[in-house]
Length: 305
Ligand SMILES: [Zn+2]
Image 1 (tube, rainbow, N blue to C red):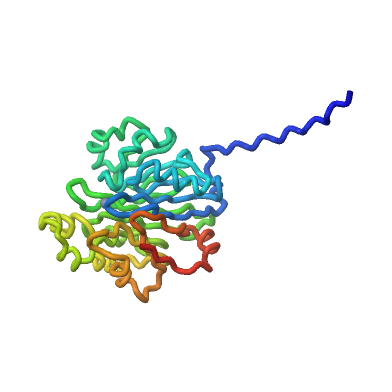
Image 2: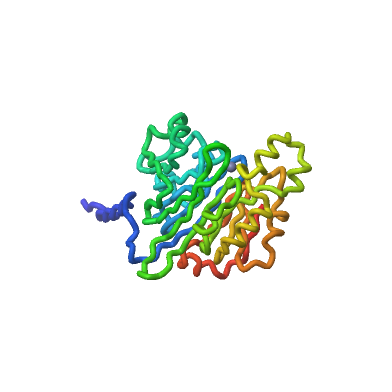
């Protein structure tokens, strides 16, 4: 009896190592996606690498793990691709409690030392968590992080300068500045973020809409007295002082006391591309590394909101 020819067994797909670091001599594609930004939740992704091999750093985690998972699924990625979570502070719009249980075990939560007590009460120290000080440090992907401590409510917030590894020695690293819930811009913020390639910074409120709003006076004072948020004018002033080289992303627009047009009005005729993060919808990927930048240089400027 003739047996049907044996089918060749297809080769097993090569398992992707979760721990594989990029070769430092090869340029790495890095992109920023602001998933959402407002007082209802702030979360951005720093995506490193290509396609389904991408690894992720979260910048703030103020959206539920379910929402982040849904977005990642559109890229063919899962939560297990997250290596690090950098938290500017622990208010719920920047740190959703769902992450205590949902963050993959290998992923490191990075929390500023002044937030340690609050982190402990929130259960964030029961898992793999690193406490950082004012000193620069490295995270996965050989990203170099410089924290900048600023006033915001009682414990303050941290802004970050993120420098990508340089494949060619003696060349300037490509860099991202990430600054939100600032209170007021400081000299240290401006000098540390000076001339970053891409600057993501809050532009929270229009003073006229804030004054005319029905918010209680103590809330208005808390927002505007230098320990709360930046107005559109203060944001634009900080941006001019920092002089980013390529792109500005406006974060955390108040839905009640701001509009995308009012925020954008302070950035007309400037030498950078402008993106306005939406309170609910993700931005298109914003190239940070020069490689991903070259690939998207033909795209038109983007405005959301
Ligand atoms: Zn906030």
